[in-house]
Image 1 (cartoon, rainbow, N blue to C red):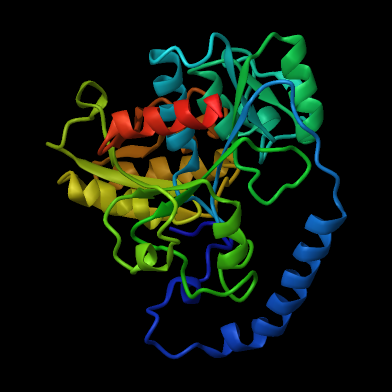
Image 2 (cartoon, rainbow, N blue to C red):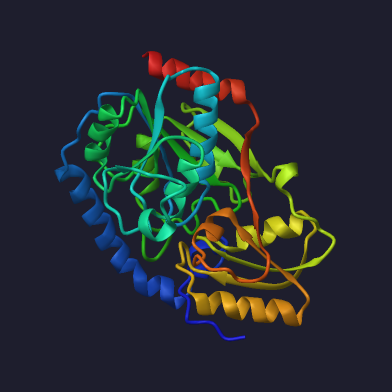
Length: 337
């Protein structure tokens, strides 16, 4: 089954620390130096605007998915459940969508091509403002009477002041090979990112030793991802799985962990905009293997709006904190101060 050429995360970004760097990584290293210089200049030259309400930034230090959106969604539940704000809103740049904003995302009227998949996921839970210009989004939030903003991504964007910055770490991949883009996955150097962070969130078990690199004077909150029992498809039949994530193999490994019978697996690039032809090919292959199509909740939102004539299942996930009360106490203390 042939699909269009798909550019995915380079495997050497997440090679073992004791392994030898491949020629591609060595060739790209000088460009990482250029990237690092450009990032420092951009950070220094930008002015920073203070919002009229507290801003909690959920960011990461690597390119691609590390679990920021599940953390942001869970934080919104904690904040509303603990009554730490009366009208908290999400703020996102709407990566992958055409809209620049500022605008209020309508989950039922918008689509991923307009606002991006992450914006739709956020809007399903709470009021969500899309704005490529973060300060403009914060000003728009004031007009909407928001009294707190949870910003999904934006740690490396200096234009809006953050009152709390949480750095999310995927325990399975950590900080990769430790190099800046494009030779590695880092968006900025570890010392720079650590300095910005008020706390860290580790999702899953630390398999790369990332925790040992973190500053000891800043809190670390542990969490893991689960699939809600009432939304879990049956495991008694074969599936054709596909996903377009920063590290799509995370979805494959989750399915394995849940004992799903994977008849076929197709990874796509992060935020991949599926075309009808892609889905028809997947359906054709699934029929030959008597399998059911299954994908992530984010990928499902990016499917073309058509009647495919077959079931395409989605596997939603939720973040579960190891110590929820500690997270609430941390946020409450930071907001008070």
